[in-house]
Amino acid sequence: MIVSVMYPVGPGQKFDTDYYMKSHIPLVNSLFGPLGLKHTQVLQGTGSPSGDPAGFLVIALLDFESAGAFKSAVDAHGAAVFGDIPKFTDVQPAIQFNDRLA
Image (cartoon, rainbow, N blue to C red; front, top):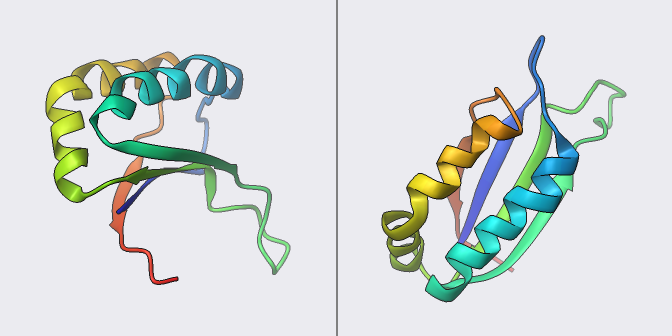
């Protein structure tokens, strides 16, 4: 199961990409990895086919063994991971569960 953590573009927001990549993502990997996180991919929005700005600043794709593994990871370490968010952004992320089709 893939969990998408998406940070939408909005007016007046802050997002410290350096902190996110050097501190937050390693924190996520170290805490959630032993509990079923298999792989993390981070994407930075750069635009759209129409030439408009991207709708999301950053999208993190977290590949978990199962929905149960994600729940266990969040139950164990969610406070630390979600509590770290204000250190790099004032944007509320949208979180979505996804099943891989191919």
